[in-house]
Image 1: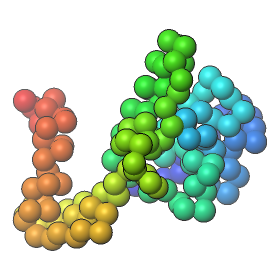
Image 2: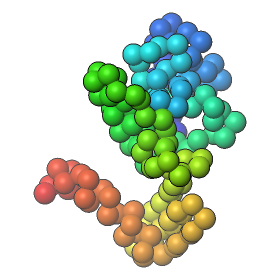
Image 3: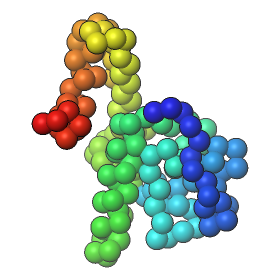
Image 4: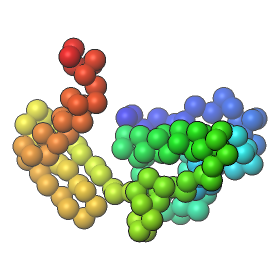
Length: 144
């Protein structure tokens, strides 16, 4: 994650759904691009219209969750089912403002900082928890 801007060669296509200040696509809570029923956006390309003032987090965890949700809703639309609403469609109906906020920063091979909502953990435990998802989710990268 480098914090770069979203690719916006589709500006003409996006119309009013493109936020001119952030270059994010405005989406509904079903992750449909506003004004485009059959177009979904996820990750760094999207910004939930009702959360513009909340500045949702742009990180790998959120990108993965919104991509999963968009894929689920594409399947549901194709099957004629009601679309799920983010984040409740992923995290459950009792989830208030969203999926858990998770941050993990490596500080060398044996140190790090992990934040899970209000809980902050530092040291080797955080480093292991930062390493573990990459090891379990990317076996081809690690040569396994």
